[in-house]
Image (cartoon, rainbow, N blue to C red; front, side):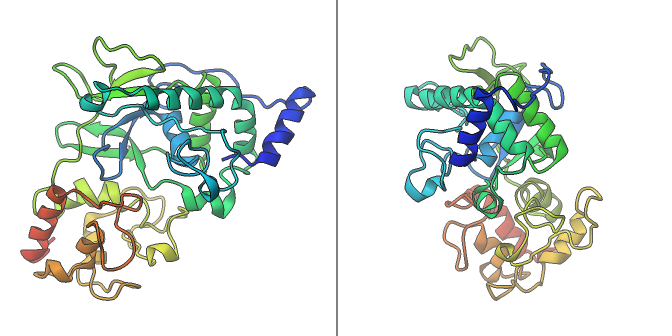
Length: 343
């Protein structure tokens, strides 16, 4: 997000040719951190598996996520001070076969205009990232999307891994800077894989008008009713990102201090599934009351309740998905708890 005063000062700076920031050279290609590196959205919604370019995903996650601040859909207080019309909403215009085959003029125009705005203001945007003024402190953290973008997808297991680093990291800023330097290319549409197509690859014989077409990854497959499967397909990709005390901005009072990786040191790699199991099963649900996972009693398990559309305490999880997880994802978790929630 960009403050009006900061943008105005930046434009004056550019006009005076005295403090133009440097975006550097454009590294093109599909490799890690290059302008067309593909990442996949995971948030427990029907949009799971949507491909975006890495820089495109960083902007979408940090600047309003189609709902706040620099989003065409945001109005009034929802803009959090972002100037009207200064929109950077670069989510793909369509995310599956059905929506891509119907009229998408509105979403295409939104994407076209947001990409133009991004390109026109690329130096000013980068200046605010470099000086740390955007996203703006606590206000920025309040609207950062809980969506996670993963760099790798295993089609054999239907699992995602290797999360894209955020703009608060040197790697994330490097990726975003390069994306801006390359003209802010976008994935315009996503298609299901046809025979011989790999997730993230270019769609066969599909031409975009604003950006590119990329093959989407498979949606989250329902887990089997056992802990290893539930951990790999639900808990690790959807819960651990926020519920880990490793300095991420989401961990805090709003998460009821639930650290799922409390016995896994920060920055030491993936959380141990056994440690996460121990942090859930039979443990008190701080702030909500009751038990996170009550073996043999799914109806008394706050963990399961929170992933439904109308939890008895707080917002549905994952945060940002008001409908909760799909019933077919919840059913195996319910069965696992009913069977004793074993490791």
